[in-house]
Length: 220
Image (tube, rainbow, N blue to C red; front, top):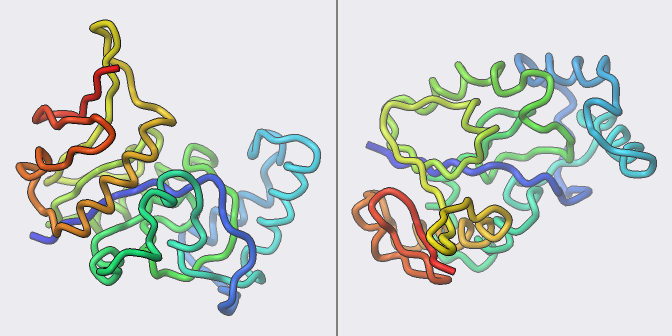
């Protein structure tokens, strides 16, 4: 059974691109682009002034702007920690990782995409993508590193949810922003060591986290 690692996209994205525009799209992506045009920008983006104007401009050019591989488009803590450029086995990463995008569904790291702005909890994107995404995950073993909003866009029969949790004074709490870096490091470790079984998670020991059999826990 093939292993798939599910990641969220980053909210921040690189501008530009060196590859041709999409020009046209179909299906759910096309429907969402139309919905973006009709939506109230302030409610859709939750931004003000310059940031709002930039988000609107970016989405106005989804079909005409240059594209780049998704792994280069998505920036942020998780992707910085993965450090794709220095991975020796990039082909394994490209085959095993899928990114759950609000606009494009399940995206491979090598897929060429434009810059865009759409959170998965807007315009019912998660619900719209659920059936299509889930169909692609049939007969796969899923290592799920998704936040709650993105989990609503997928279903799978075989797999494991991976959480990074902090424990302070006996109380457990989600690792939150701190967990993004370790999540990226974990993905890199999975790829570099060809990990396909959660029984091997106990061998991942970075930044003070230990696999309990259910979660990665760090006492602080």
